[in-house]
Image 1 (cartoon, rainbow, N blue to C red):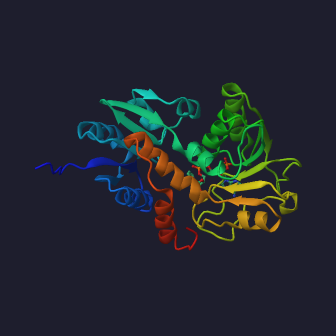
Image 2: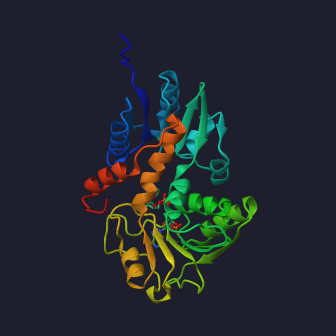
Image 3: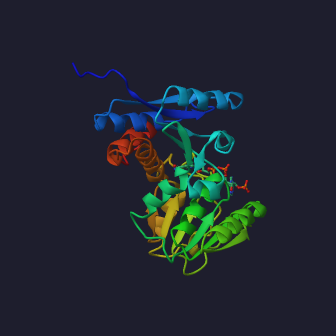
Length: 285
Ligand code: NDP
């Protein structure tokens, strides 16, 4: 009898973790693909991160995601890191191969996969709002993908300075930092505008302070906010003839890329997106 009662194990380490829907999205993908694999959502406190990582290794997990607050702290336990993760300085996806821990960062890669469904960022001008972890990962991946210029705009300008320098020092992309005062004006000729702030999360009426009259017809306007997927930022851009891109796609693609790294299998993004849309209670799948 050839039956195999051993499931492939993957999961996530973060705290708090109860509101993270990634487990439902990935397990729906596993099920649809007929894979006997599990994704276990673990609440891991900072003091226990090392034990959790060693536990995953001991139990021969295929890999795991690290979310807040472990994206930087996990680095000390790794054997190696992918180039982008090394530049970004944060890891949210760890693969376990032959007993070695390899760190990667799928935040920016998930965004890029989503962006590429509407535009190729090579040689494009980008206006990036925000300078936190998501903005940093997106800026580095855009630079590596050959974007021509990125303007990083942030209220705390020093954070934007850091990201612009990171892009300039590690990619061929030009990058500048700009202080965010009042309503930010998008420069004429910008190809891609990105809200990478947390403004709009869980609030369909909240919007990052942007002069909406500076949106240009034909521009791609993206948001990192996955819930609600159709943010006010995107609605205002769409009204002015821009192509909106929801943050939900970034989240789904991160899941797809993570499982590709762990198992070498590509899950069905449509099934995963529908699962998240049901959870977020939208009909946007
Ligand atoms: P951080 O806390 O690292 O960064 C938040 C950024 O938002 C900072 O630049 C901060 O500015 C800025 N910000 C916060 N409030 C305001 C405001 N009122 N006006 C202008 N700027 C503001 O968060 P992350 O980068 O990790 O995450 C940002 C968002 O991205 C979150 O909502 C998260 O849900 C989403 N995200 C989505 C993912 C997806 O897959 N769709 C993946 C990862 C994140 P300052 O530096 O001045 O404080």
